Structure formats: structure tokens, C-alpha cells
Picture: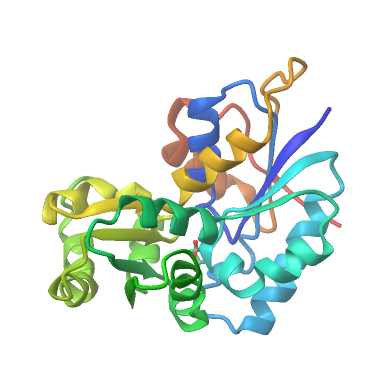
Length: 260
Ligand code: DGL
């Protein structure tokens, strides 16, 4: 039985799993959330690379048809290192979100919101400029968002989410962006709030963009039967409760504690 392996620093990567299963419910998925080391967004490149390679090794204990780096922070810091070591094709969110953004923009002014480590890495501007050399790219870190989303502030127009967005988005909007990459696994969960605040801006979900490419590249197998395995590196009960909120009815299993 072959699986699409997906890893993230924690819960947020389930937005990629959700997007895959919405389009192909019978796909077999093994997910590893490194909840013990979450968040990655305030860690160094060296630390994140170590975690990412470990996450790859955890998933490679399963028979993988593809490995998806759902975490923007891990892909920005360590996508190349993982691709160099992995035994199966690797799909990272940064490239696919960037491809979707250059397709969407009309004025070639693209904004990116992400964690501090993703912004510091320069991975999005680098990738976007490779794809569209005359693009202008504006990035902003929004460190307040991940903890709020993890704490369940998911309702449209949640006041604390709006306040956090007011701290990072106006500077990008003033630059005249017409497209905004939600460059973090968690941000698709607050897309409705962002869309309500800035209806004229086209939002690109890095999670949906990656899921689309993975499903285009990995053909459905008639033997796939929708097996789900979810592992985490710390206490799983909390993760399972939150995962049900992130995934809605698509979640079929509890998270298990991954032990070496
Ligand atoms: N998964 C991370 C990302 O997509 C966000 C959470 C973290 O900081 O670990 O960038």
C-alpha cells in the first residue's frame, strides 16, 4: 500500500491534507506533525533543516509515492536539503504557491504573508522572481496569527485576527499588490476574514496550490482505499481535537504518538 506522505511543524499542514482529500477522498495519506518542535517560524535555518530531515525519515518508514512539505517554513529553509536526500518525488509548497500567484497577478505586484523564518529566508521573492523576473514582491511576517489560529480563532471577522492582520497587511496593500500569497499552512483557515477586508485582492492558498500539483502529478491508484495515518511527536489527544476542527468530516482517525 502506497501513501502520499505529508509533513508539517504541527497542525497547520492538515490544510494540505484537507485539500487533497476534498479532491480525492480515496487517497492514502500518512501525515507527520512535529508538534513537539512547533512552531518552526521562530527557529534558525539549521534547526529547521534538522527537523525537516527527521520528518522525512519518519515518513520514509512508509511506502511513499510522494512526499509533500506542507510547512512553508520548512520548505523555505530546507526544501532543497529534503529534495536532495528523499527517495521519492518531493513537493514543496513555496514553488506551487508562487506558480499560482504569477498566473493570477495582472499588475505583477505580489504580496506574501508568512512566518518570520519564511520571510527571512527570502524563498518566496527568489522563487517568484525566477518565474516572473519583473515581478515586485512585498513580504510581511505575521507572528501573531499562528498562535491565534491554533487557539481556535477561526470565525470570520474574529476581532483578534483582524487586529493581527491590521498589523501586517496595510503595508503590503499600500504597495498596490493585486495578489497575496497565504504563505503559511494556517492562513487558509482565515482566508474568509482576509477576503472580507480586501475583496479586490486575489488570495493564493499555498495549501491548495500544493495539493493541486500533487494530485496532477500523482495518478490515482485503483487500490487506494482512503487509509489515513496521523502521527505527532507530542501528546496526541490535543492534536486530535484540533485536527477535527481543521479537517471537518474528512478526518477518519485519531492522531498517534510517533515514537522511534
Ligand atoms: N507550518 C508553519 C508554516 O507553514 C507555520 C507554523 C510554524 O511556525 O511552525 O510556515
